[in-house]
Length: 128
Image (spheres, rainbow, N blue to C red):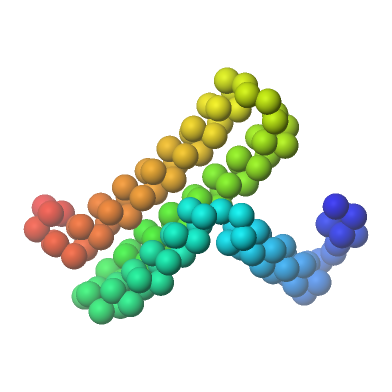
């Protein structure tokens, strides 16, 4: 925590480098502590070459890859929410359960979104 406060008022390149370090730490924590995140990264590693191969143009490739990146983004936010809930309310509580369930629902919706995007882009007849 003291590291964070030490750099809180920084600006310019120092702030950017600090932010990149925090982002790196967040990705490393997600990789280390979240099995779902690791699985979704593996999905991304499979999906990117497929998107580059099957995407008809730049827009299609961006949609295909972006939909999977969105899953990773939502997963990280969900994991952060779960960590905060666990810290604030280690005992079972209805509000803690609700928060965790809603985060899980957000990940599910992101996965459904990715499936719909891939279906619409790869099978154009499904979009009409």
